[in-house]
Amino acid sequence: MQLRNILEWALRILIAGILLQTLFFKFTGAPESIYIFEKTGLGTPGRIGSGIVELCASILLLFPSFKAYGALLALATMSGALFFHLTSLGIDVMDDGGQLFYLACVVWAGSLYLVIKYRNEWLPARFLTMDKEA
Image 1: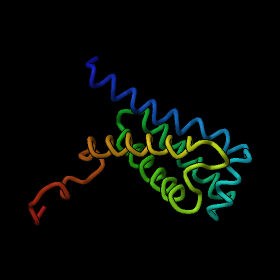
Image 2 (image 1 turned 45 degrees about the horizontal axis):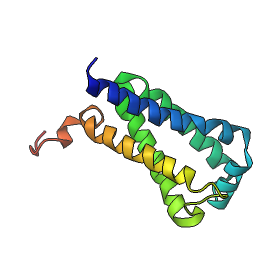
Image 3 (image 1 turned 120 degrees about the horizontal axis):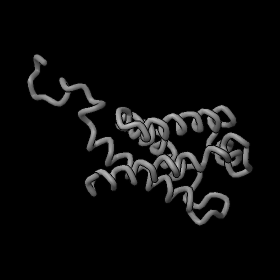
């Protein structure tokens, strides 16, 4: 296996791992998760829904054929998380020292890299060409 492939797998596993570690807190109703989703106005449906989306993204990232779709899903989810951190939540949530914010930044940046790298796998070819008839 080439070093580039190993590093890409490591990135995908890192992103999936970060997403998966938050699921326990979201699905069990940990006080931090309840606080975050109540403060953003999304409540329990938002907490459970985002957990399901993050679980799907994690699974897709670990299957080579679906890695681009997993990265897209992770990027979209983390874009929402970062939006709320930069608006209603703030960077430091419940005295976590910004840990959730920084982890969201790592997932967002890694996912963006994968989305751009594998754009040919998720973006229809007709949008990649300058030919107007395609």
